[in-house]
Length: 106
Image (cartoon, rainbow, N blue to C red; front, top):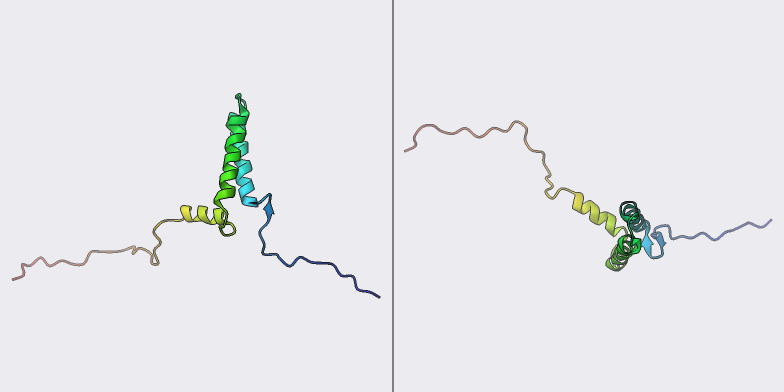
């Protein structure tokens, strides 16, 4: 009795690329395309008002992300949304100013 074996790809940590774009990039490009088509699609010249800006966005993403880490765009958006001042301690709730001396010191 022979054992059946199948080849298993061991690269589970690799990112999923479709035409050189990550999935989030494609969602961004197609979302931009659908918004432009919904707002400007009923006017004339849809090639220039809908398709050209979308192709330019895709080209900018493709060229701008070369050499960057995986999920760079998601991390960049999270960095921009995060508050700029991070504090390790909570602000005191019942803070009072220190007592002041009303006597004249000589």
